Amino acid sequence: MVMYHVAQGRHLTERMTDGQKVPCVDGRNSLRLKLYRKGYGLESAMIKGPSIEGHNGVVHVIDKVIRPPINNIIELLEKDGNFSIMLEALQKVRKTEPQLLDTAHKSLTLFAPSDEAFRKLDKHTLQKIMTDTEYLSKVVKNHLVDTMIPSCAFKEKLHYSVKTKQNYLDIEKKHHRLQVEKAHVLKMDLVTRDGLIHYVDRVILPEEN
Image (cartoon, rainbow, N blue to C red; front, side):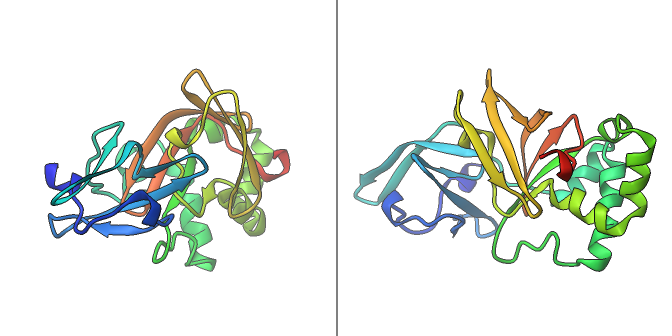
């Protein structure tokens, strides 16, 4: 884990680019760098003390311990066991849109509704989601963002409009917790090899944005 915090090369914040990947000295992992409006981050952490230069490198002080991700998005949802409906929806959309979860040049954020969240829907809506291919695609894409957005990227008392693969989501942070449209984030910042996941308690329908 210690070697995951050490990157090869000398990386100053003013030379960082959003989404840049820098290899770790462990030879197996990379760190994904993030640029925000008023700060810098990597993985799900914020850089609090940037670019402290020494004779043999640069130190960036971050606000949490980070660990190398083991699973991808699909594997983590499968491992949890409470996302069978979302997994089925993702599988159906990927049959016609195989690039849905492509992360060759980017990382993703998934707002993942649990099975319980889907069961809160009325029967007509749930049936439409699972039988109407076009509508299913819109619903799934409404939960996917083409970049990593950890909870630390959001500040209290501010409103954010975040572009998904389908629409825009209104997001705000209250008492250190995220609200996405009418959905509350139950578990934040689950880091995966292809991005990160936030568990939400409600399906975010595109027509409700």
